[in-house]
Structure formats: C-alpha cells, structure tokens
Image 1 (tube, rainbow, N blue to C red):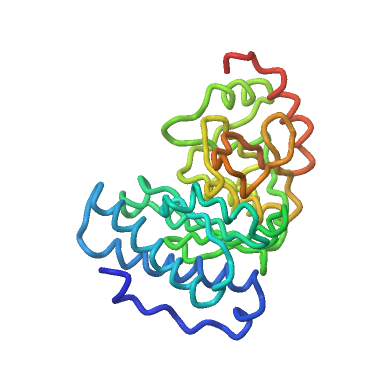
Image 2: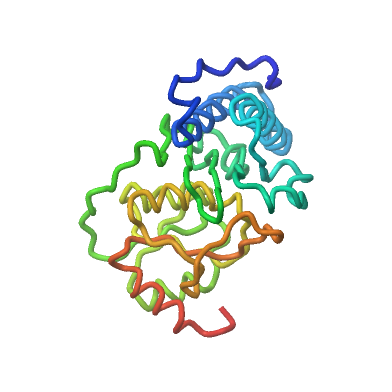
Length: 266
C-alpha cells in the first residue's frame, strides 16, 4: 500500500502552533500507516523496506506541509545525514520512521516504534514515540511520570538479540534483572512507563535512534546521558551517537558507577 493511498487524519488545530502536538500527531499517523503496510501480505525484507520507505515519505510530507521552514534529519533520507545546512538551522526535526524493523516484520510483535523529535538551538524541545501495535503514543505533549512499580531487583531493558557485554556486567554488579525487548524506542518507553528502571546501550546507535525517546524520557524527569555521564548532543555533523543511558533519576548514580567500574574490554 503506497503512502499516496493513505490519508492522514485531520490535524488537530493545536498542530499549527504547538510542536509537541505536531510530534505526537505525526508519529501517530505514521504508525497508522505502518499498521496498514503490515496487512499487505509482504514479508521479511520486503515488509521492512516498505515500512521504512512509506513511513518516511509520509513524515516528510507532513513536515513539508506543517513545518515547511524547518530542516529534517531522517534515518531513511541519506542526503540529510550529510546536509550541512541543517547544522546552522535553528530547528531540525530528527525522525526514525520505523524503529525496530525486525520486530515490525514479525507480526504480531508489538515492540517497534516511530520516532519524531524536534531539536532547536542545541536542545531537544519536543518529541513523540508512537507504539502503533500497542495503540499508544507517548509524547512531550502529554506524558506523565509513572508510579514506581515494586520490584525486588532493578530491571534493565536490553536487546533481545544482541545485548552488549557491558550490560551483563552492570546487571551482575547491581543484581539487576535483564528484560529483553525490541526497538530502542520501546526500551526507553519502558523506563518512561515504569516497566523498566534503566536502559543502557553501548553497541552503536545514531541520533534518530534516541532523539525522540530521550525527549519523552526527559519530560518525565528521567536521567539521560552518554554512558560516561556526559550530555547527549544532537544535530551534529557526525550522526553516530553510539551509547546512552536512560534511567530513573534515583538509580542513575548506581548505574553510572557500575558502568564506570566495568572492565575496559566490555
């Protein structure tokens, strides 16, 4: 189903002036499209490629219509990666049209996402992460801090297929439980909604993998940083942003200390 045959819902009036509302609406609409793509009969690589392409085309069209003066950095638009004009722009939308393509291509898995974030003058200022197969979008427009869930051990969200050695070291040091799940957005949202206490990644990511999730996590007061505790920086010439930590603020010191104590070869 090509994006040209998908009709987005009517944009709420708030979308015209409110970047938080726009991010939430755009991510949700891309999620609706992806759910339809999933019903076309495509499988495997063809389904992955269709999802990436169709969602990207839709998000670019919504940005062109509603935020025509803003720059865009998208995983699926290679020209945007080396676009030097975005480096001097005041406003840059950082998008991942489909985060977790493997999970998306394995119906009925629901641990995949759509990321839409706005960077402005050095900071992430708005963001949304749609979880279409769960019929929900968490955004800086409306997300609420969760009530801490009782747990006998820290829960660390981790890749279901390629958890880095560092995470295993930290889990052992803290007596933590590893909770496997899909996309980066889903893992960070697990911290946001209280079903995990931390997400640690050290295996290589890009700005679009974390921009929107980090924006939403910051909206509920979560700690976000590089694994050495330094700030995360977006809209850089080098779009690789290889590691991050997102966790509840009350466990941040313990988590960062355990990371610092890990052997260098992890």
